[in-house]
Amino acid sequence: MSGKAPKRKGDGYERELAKYFNKIVFGDEDLVQRAPLSGGGAVKSSGGSDLKNTPHIYVEAKRTEKFQIHQSVAQVKENIDISQSDAMPIVITRRNRQETGDSLCVLKLDDFLELYKLLIKEKGMSD
Image (tube, rainbow, N blue to C red; front, side):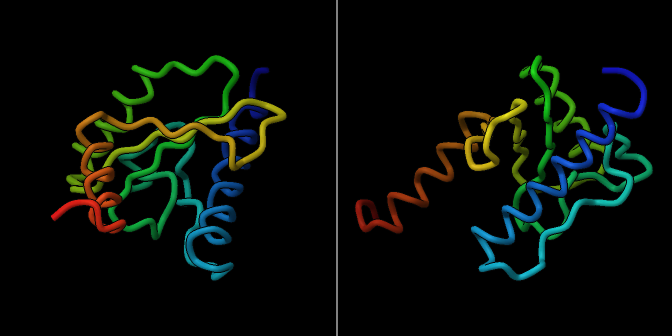
């Protein structure tokens, strides 16, 4: 795939994720949106995360068959540094013909453990 097709695919995935977040997290309220000019990692012109109105998380969306995990995590960390955000970096990715809900989420172990501690506390299994 060359030219504008990969960009269109990525932009579409960002819109798809925003719609999915709205459905699952916010009861179909139209809160989460694709950030304008977010494609291509252009944090300097777009302001950062691929999705707007996702409190506490900084989303980098990747729709690719050849996911480069370390490069993608480095990109989201660099964008967070540039934008001076204190949000948790997360990369969300899926392949072609894969359902949105089957997308993979990549985050650092320390960030995952923070979420896990909250879950355990919520379920009444920890102080």
